[in-house]
Image (cartoon, rainbow, N blue to C red; front, side, top):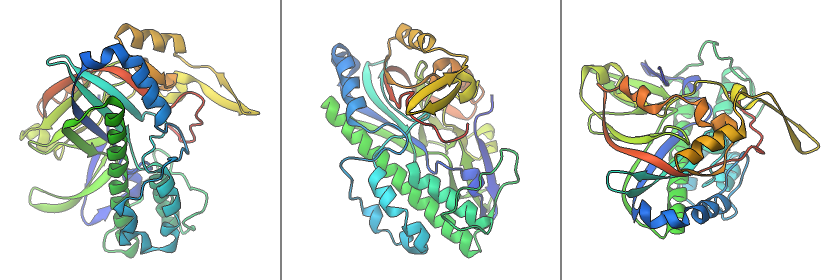
Length: 359
Protein backbone atom coordinates (compact mmCIF):
# COMPACT_ATOMS: atom_id res chain seq x y z
CA UNK A 1 0.00 0.00 0.00
CA UNK A 2 2.41 2.69 -1.14
CA UNK A 3 1.52 6.21 -0.04
CA UNK A 4 3.57 9.18 -1.20
CA UNK A 5 7.08 9.22 -2.58
CA UNK A 6 10.57 10.20 -1.47
CA UNK A 7 13.51 11.11 -3.71
CA UNK A 8 16.94 12.56 -2.94
CA UNK A 9 18.75 14.95 -5.28
CA UNK A 10 22.32 16.18 -5.17
CA UNK A 11 22.26 19.98 -5.28
CA UNK A 12 18.91 20.05 -7.05
CA UNK A 13 15.18 20.29 -6.35
CA UNK A 14 12.09 19.30 -8.31
CA UNK A 15 9.03 21.60 -8.27
CA UNK A 16 7.18 18.73 -9.95
CA UNK A 17 7.96 16.50 -6.99
CA UNK A 18 7.05 19.08 -4.38
CA UNK A 19 3.82 19.69 -6.26
CA UNK A 20 1.14 22.36 -6.34
CA UNK A 21 0.10 22.43 -2.67
CA UNK A 22 3.50 23.36 -1.27
CA UNK A 23 3.90 22.50 2.43
CA UNK A 24 0.50 20.92 2.82
CA UNK A 25 0.67 19.54 6.32
CA UNK A 26 -0.89 18.23 9.49
CA UNK A 27 -1.18 19.82 12.92
CA UNK A 28 -2.55 18.07 16.00
CA UNK A 29 -3.27 19.81 19.29
CA UNK A 30 -3.92 17.99 22.55
CA UNK A 31 -6.28 20.24 24.49
CA UNK A 32 -6.81 20.50 28.24
CA UNK A 33 -10.39 19.23 27.79
CA UNK A 34 -11.87 15.75 27.89
CA UNK A 35 -14.04 14.60 25.02
CA UNK A 36 -16.80 13.96 27.55
CA UNK A 37 -16.73 17.72 28.26
CA UNK A 38 -17.78 18.57 24.70
CA UNK A 39 -19.88 15.62 23.54
CA UNK A 40 -23.17 17.12 24.80
CA UNK A 41 -22.48 20.26 22.69
CA UNK A 42 -20.63 18.65 19.79
CA UNK A 43 -23.25 19.53 17.20
CA UNK A 44 -23.25 23.22 18.13
CA UNK A 45 -19.44 23.26 18.32
CA UNK A 46 -19.09 21.81 14.82
CA UNK A 47 -21.62 24.35 13.55
CA UNK A 48 -19.50 27.15 14.99
CA UNK A 49 -16.27 25.76 13.52
CA UNK A 50 -17.87 25.34 10.09
CA UNK A 51 -19.53 28.76 10.10
CA UNK A 52 -16.65 30.79 11.53
CA UNK A 53 -13.74 29.36 9.57
CA UNK A 54 -13.31 29.61 5.81
CA UNK A 55 -13.63 26.29 3.96
CA UNK A 56 -13.51 26.13 0.16
CA UNK A 57 -11.69 27.10 -3.01
CA UNK A 58 -10.72 30.74 -3.34
CA UNK A 59 -11.97 31.70 0.13
CA UNK A 60 -10.53 34.79 1.79
CA UNK A 61 -10.13 35.53 5.47
CA UNK A 62 -12.63 38.27 6.43
CA UNK A 63 -10.12 39.35 9.10
CA UNK A 64 -6.74 39.37 7.26
CA UNK A 65 -3.71 38.52 9.40
CA UNK A 66 -0.64 40.76 9.52
CA UNK A 67 2.09 38.16 9.97
CA UNK A 68 5.85 38.81 10.10
CA UNK A 69 6.29 36.50 7.11
CA UNK A 70 5.01 39.32 4.88
CA UNK A 71 8.20 41.26 5.74
CA UNK A 72 10.43 38.43 4.52
CA UNK A 73 12.91 39.65 1.84
CA UNK A 74 12.16 36.54 -0.24
CA UNK A 75 9.08 38.32 -1.64
CA UNK A 76 11.47 40.51 -3.64
CA UNK A 77 13.25 37.70 -5.53
CA UNK A 78 11.28 38.78 -8.61
CA UNK A 79 8.42 41.23 -9.23
CA UNK A 80 6.10 38.44 -10.40
CA UNK A 81 6.54 36.59 -7.13
CA UNK A 82 5.88 39.73 -5.09
CA UNK A 83 2.65 40.09 -7.08
CA UNK A 84 1.37 37.06 -5.12
CA UNK A 85 1.57 38.85 -1.76
CA UNK A 86 -1.97 40.35 -1.85
CA UNK A 87 -3.46 36.91 -2.57
CA UNK A 88 -1.37 35.38 0.20
CA UNK A 89 -2.49 38.06 2.66
CA UNK A 90 -6.14 37.58 1.79
CA UNK A 91 -6.09 33.78 2.19
CA UNK A 92 -3.86 33.29 5.23
CA UNK A 93 -5.83 31.26 7.78
CA UNK A 94 -8.32 29.74 5.31
CA UNK A 95 -8.64 25.99 4.93
CA UNK A 96 -9.43 25.26 1.30
CA UNK A 97 -11.19 22.28 -0.24
CA UNK A 98 -10.41 18.70 -1.27
CA UNK A 99 -9.07 16.58 1.60
CA UNK A 100 -8.39 19.56 3.86
CA UNK A 101 -10.17 19.57 7.20
CA UNK A 102 -10.58 20.64 10.80
CA UNK A 103 -11.43 17.68 13.05
CA UNK A 104 -12.05 16.94 16.70
CA UNK A 105 -10.73 13.62 18.05
CA UNK A 106 -10.89 11.59 21.22
CA UNK A 107 -8.03 9.50 22.58
CA UNK A 108 -10.09 6.68 24.04
CA UNK A 109 -7.26 5.70 26.42
CA UNK A 110 -7.65 8.87 28.52
CA UNK A 111 -10.65 10.65 26.90
CA UNK A 112 -8.37 13.57 25.88
CA UNK A 113 -9.84 15.93 23.28
CA UNK A 114 -7.58 16.63 20.29
CA UNK A 115 -7.86 19.06 17.38
CA UNK A 116 -6.59 17.95 13.95
CA UNK A 117 -5.89 20.30 11.02
CA UNK A 118 -4.82 19.54 7.44
CA UNK A 119 -4.19 22.09 4.68
CA UNK A 120 -1.33 23.84 2.93
CA UNK A 121 -0.23 27.08 1.30
CA UNK A 122 -3.50 27.74 -0.52
CA UNK A 123 -3.56 29.76 -3.77
CA UNK A 124 -0.20 31.30 -2.98
CA UNK A 125 1.53 27.90 -3.00
CA UNK A 126 -0.30 26.78 -6.13
CA UNK A 127 0.60 29.91 -8.08
CA UNK A 128 4.19 29.67 -6.86
CA UNK A 129 4.46 26.16 -8.29
CA UNK A 130 2.75 26.97 -11.59
CA UNK A 131 4.77 30.15 -11.96
CA UNK A 132 8.13 28.39 -11.65
CA UNK A 133 7.01 25.54 -13.89
CA UNK A 134 6.08 28.17 -16.46
CA UNK A 135 9.54 29.75 -16.19
CA UNK A 136 11.11 26.31 -16.67
CA UNK A 137 9.23 26.05 -19.97
CA UNK A 138 10.29 29.53 -21.12
CA UNK A 139 6.85 30.94 -20.42
CA UNK A 140 5.94 33.97 -18.31
CA UNK A 141 5.42 33.44 -14.58
CA UNK A 142 1.75 34.47 -14.66
CA UNK A 143 0.84 32.62 -17.86
CA UNK A 144 -1.93 30.08 -17.73
CA UNK A 145 -0.42 27.00 -16.03
CA UNK A 146 1.27 24.51 -18.31
CA UNK A 147 0.18 21.42 -16.43
CA UNK A 148 2.48 18.43 -16.25
CA UNK A 149 1.00 15.03 -17.03
CA UNK A 150 1.27 12.25 -14.46
CA UNK A 151 3.99 10.34 -16.29
CA UNK A 152 5.88 13.32 -17.70
CA UNK A 153 9.57 13.65 -16.92
CA UNK A 154 9.98 15.69 -13.74
CA UNK A 155 11.14 19.29 -13.93
CA UNK A 156 14.36 19.60 -11.90
CA UNK A 157 16.22 22.81 -11.01
CA UNK A 158 19.90 22.86 -10.11
CA UNK A 159 20.44 24.77 -6.88
CA UNK A 160 23.51 26.24 -8.54
CA UNK A 161 21.21 28.13 -10.92
CA UNK A 162 19.43 31.42 -10.15
CA UNK A 163 16.07 29.81 -10.99
CA UNK A 164 16.72 26.91 -8.63
CA UNK A 165 17.78 29.21 -5.83
CA UNK A 166 14.73 31.43 -6.32
CA UNK A 167 12.37 28.45 -6.33
CA UNK A 168 13.92 26.97 -3.19
CA UNK A 169 13.58 30.31 -1.37
CA UNK A 170 9.97 30.70 -2.56
CA UNK A 171 9.13 27.13 -1.52
CA UNK A 172 10.51 27.75 1.97
CA UNK A 173 8.46 30.94 2.30
CA UNK A 174 5.36 28.95 1.29
CA UNK A 175 6.28 26.53 4.08
CA UNK A 176 6.31 29.35 6.64
CA UNK A 177 3.01 30.55 5.22
CA UNK A 178 1.36 27.14 5.57
CA UNK A 179 2.58 26.79 9.16
CA UNK A 180 1.25 30.26 10.03
CA UNK A 181 -2.15 29.36 8.54
CA UNK A 182 -2.46 26.14 10.52
CA UNK A 183 -1.34 27.89 13.72
CA UNK A 184 -4.01 30.55 13.19
CA UNK A 185 -6.78 28.00 12.57
CA UNK A 186 -5.67 25.98 15.60
CA UNK A 187 -5.92 29.07 17.76
CA UNK A 188 -9.39 29.86 16.45
CA UNK A 189 -10.61 26.34 17.22
CA UNK A 190 -9.18 26.51 20.75
CA UNK A 191 -11.06 29.79 21.24
CA UNK A 192 -14.31 28.19 20.06
CA UNK A 193 -13.76 25.30 22.46
CA UNK A 194 -12.70 27.58 25.32
CA UNK A 195 -9.65 25.32 25.60
CA UNK A 196 -5.88 25.59 25.95
CA UNK A 197 -3.15 23.63 24.19
CA UNK A 198 -1.25 21.10 26.28
CA UNK A 199 0.92 19.62 23.52
CA UNK A 200 1.25 20.00 19.74
CA UNK A 201 2.59 18.09 16.76
CA UNK A 202 3.10 20.04 13.54
CA UNK A 203 4.79 18.96 10.33
CA UNK A 204 4.27 18.98 6.59
CA UNK A 205 4.72 17.07 3.34
CA UNK A 206 4.95 18.20 -0.32
CA UNK A 207 8.26 19.87 0.48
CA UNK A 208 12.04 19.62 0.06
CA UNK A 209 14.58 19.57 2.87
CA UNK A 210 18.39 19.87 2.86
CA UNK A 211 19.58 16.81 4.79
CA UNK A 212 22.46 14.41 5.22
CA UNK A 213 22.09 10.69 4.46
CA UNK A 214 24.95 8.20 4.47
CA UNK A 215 27.40 11.06 4.78
CA UNK A 216 26.07 12.86 1.71
CA UNK A 217 24.40 16.28 1.70
CA UNK A 218 21.28 16.12 -0.42
CA UNK A 219 17.86 17.62 -0.99
CA UNK A 220 15.06 15.22 -0.05
CA UNK A 221 11.68 15.78 -1.71
CA UNK A 222 8.77 14.18 0.14
CA UNK A 223 5.57 14.20 -1.92
CA UNK A 224 2.70 13.07 0.29
CA UNK A 225 5.30 11.77 2.75
CA UNK A 226 6.16 13.09 6.20
CA UNK A 227 9.59 13.37 7.85
CA UNK A 228 9.96 10.80 10.65
CA UNK A 229 13.49 11.02 12.02
CA UNK A 230 14.19 8.93 15.13
CA UNK A 231 12.21 10.54 17.95
CA UNK A 232 10.42 12.99 15.65
CA UNK A 233 6.66 13.11 16.22
CA UNK A 234 4.12 13.18 13.39
CA UNK A 235 0.34 13.35 13.00
CA UNK A 236 -1.00 10.92 10.40
CA UNK A 237 -4.62 11.23 9.28
CA UNK A 238 -6.99 8.49 8.21
CA UNK A 239 -10.34 9.64 6.81
CA UNK A 240 -13.51 11.18 8.20
CA UNK A 241 -14.61 7.69 9.27
CA UNK A 242 -11.35 6.17 10.44
CA UNK A 243 -8.69 6.56 13.09
CA UNK A 244 -5.74 8.95 12.96
CA UNK A 245 -2.51 8.53 14.93
CA UNK A 246 0.29 10.39 16.62
CA UNK A 247 3.51 8.51 15.91
CA UNK A 248 7.27 8.96 16.14
CA UNK A 249 10.13 7.84 13.98
CA UNK A 250 12.51 5.10 15.11
CA UNK A 251 16.10 4.25 14.22
CA UNK A 252 15.78 1.04 12.20
CA UNK A 253 17.00 -0.22 8.81
CA UNK A 254 13.42 0.10 7.52
CA UNK A 255 13.21 3.73 8.55
CA UNK A 256 16.64 4.47 7.12
CA UNK A 257 15.65 2.91 3.78
CA UNK A 258 12.77 5.42 3.61
CA UNK A 259 15.17 8.31 4.27
CA UNK A 260 13.46 8.63 7.66
CA UNK A 261 10.03 9.28 6.19
CA UNK A 262 6.52 7.94 6.61
CA UNK A 263 3.03 8.39 5.19
CA UNK A 264 1.01 11.57 5.74
CA UNK A 265 -2.35 9.82 5.56
CA UNK A 266 -4.19 6.65 4.63
CA UNK A 267 -4.29 7.18 0.87
CA UNK A 268 -7.11 6.67 -1.60
CA UNK A 269 -8.59 3.51 -3.10
CA UNK A 270 -10.53 5.41 -5.77
CA UNK A 271 -10.17 8.75 -7.51
CA UNK A 272 -12.31 11.73 -6.64
CA UNK A 273 -14.18 11.43 -9.92
CA UNK A 274 -14.91 7.74 -9.42
CA UNK A 275 -16.11 8.33 -5.87
CA UNK A 276 -18.26 11.42 -6.42
CA UNK A 277 -18.91 11.45 -10.16
CA UNK A 278 -18.42 14.36 -12.51
CA UNK A 279 -19.65 17.82 -11.58
CA UNK A 280 -20.88 20.42 -14.03
CA UNK A 281 -22.20 23.89 -13.29
CA UNK A 282 -25.02 25.43 -15.29
CA UNK A 283 -26.28 28.88 -14.34
CA UNK A 284 -24.71 28.49 -10.92
CA UNK A 285 -26.34 25.10 -10.29
CA UNK A 286 -24.28 21.95 -9.79
CA UNK A 287 -25.19 18.90 -11.86
CA UNK A 288 -23.60 15.60 -10.90
CA UNK A 289 -23.25 12.54 -13.11
CA UNK A 290 -22.20 9.12 -11.84
CA UNK A 291 -20.30 8.42 -8.65
CA UNK A 292 -19.68 5.14 -6.81
CA UNK A 293 -20.57 6.54 -3.36
CA UNK A 294 -23.82 8.20 -2.39
CA UNK A 295 -24.28 10.89 0.23
CA UNK A 296 -26.48 8.46 2.16
CA UNK A 297 -23.74 5.82 2.23
CA UNK A 298 -21.20 8.36 3.45
CA UNK A 299 -23.53 9.70 6.14
CA UNK A 300 -24.41 6.21 7.33
CA UNK A 301 -20.73 5.33 7.81
CA UNK A 302 -19.83 8.42 9.83
CA UNK A 303 -23.05 8.30 11.87
CA UNK A 304 -22.43 4.68 12.81
CA UNK A 305 -19.05 5.53 14.36
CA UNK A 306 -20.33 8.66 16.11
CA UNK A 307 -18.94 11.45 13.93
CA UNK A 308 -20.74 14.79 13.60
CA UNK A 309 -20.04 15.87 10.00
CA UNK A 310 -20.23 19.36 8.54
CA UNK A 311 -19.74 19.94 4.83
CA UNK A 312 -17.69 17.41 2.81
CA UNK A 313 -18.54 15.63 -0.43
CA UNK A 314 -18.53 11.97 -1.35
CA UNK A 315 -15.06 12.23 -2.91
CA UNK A 316 -13.86 12.37 0.72
CA UNK A 317 -16.11 9.57 1.99
CA UNK A 318 -14.44 6.86 4.10
CA UNK A 319 -15.25 4.34 1.37
CA UNK A 320 -12.83 6.22 -0.95
CA UNK A 321 -9.87 5.64 1.40
CA UNK A 322 -7.69 2.80 2.61
CA UNK A 323 -7.90 1.81 6.27
CA UNK A 324 -5.09 3.55 8.09
CA UNK A 325 -4.39 0.61 10.41
CA UNK A 326 -3.64 -1.64 7.43
CA UNK A 327 -1.35 0.98 5.88
CA UNK A 328 0.56 1.48 9.14
CA UNK A 329 1.12 -2.26 9.49
CA UNK A 330 3.45 -2.00 6.50
CA UNK A 331 5.45 0.67 8.32
CA UNK A 332 5.62 -0.99 11.72
CA UNK A 333 9.43 -1.24 11.50
CA UNK A 334 9.75 2.50 10.86
CA UNK A 335 7.26 4.01 13.32
CA UNK A 336 6.14 3.83 16.92
CA UNK A 337 2.45 4.64 17.50
CA UNK A 338 1.96 6.89 20.53
CA UNK A 339 -1.74 7.79 20.38
CA UNK A 340 -4.71 6.43 18.42
CA UNK A 341 -7.34 9.11 17.83
CA UNK A 342 -10.97 8.53 16.89
CA UNK A 343 -12.86 11.34 15.10
CA UNK A 344 -15.96 12.78 16.77
CA UNK A 345 -16.35 15.93 14.64
CA UNK A 346 -15.30 16.64 11.03
CA UNK A 347 -15.56 19.89 9.05
CA UNK A 348 -14.63 20.14 5.36
CA UNK A 349 -15.62 22.17 2.32
CA UNK A 350 -19.03 21.12 1.00
CA UNK A 351 -20.08 19.67 -2.37
CA UNK A 352 -20.93 23.08 -3.80
CA UNK A 353 -17.21 23.92 -4.00
CA UNK A 354 -15.69 23.91 -7.47
CA UNK A 355 -12.60 21.68 -7.43
CA UNK A 356 -10.36 23.04 -10.20
CA UNK A 357 -7.53 20.61 -9.49
CA UNK A 358 -6.99 17.15 -10.88
CA UNK A 359 -6.78 14.06 -8.70
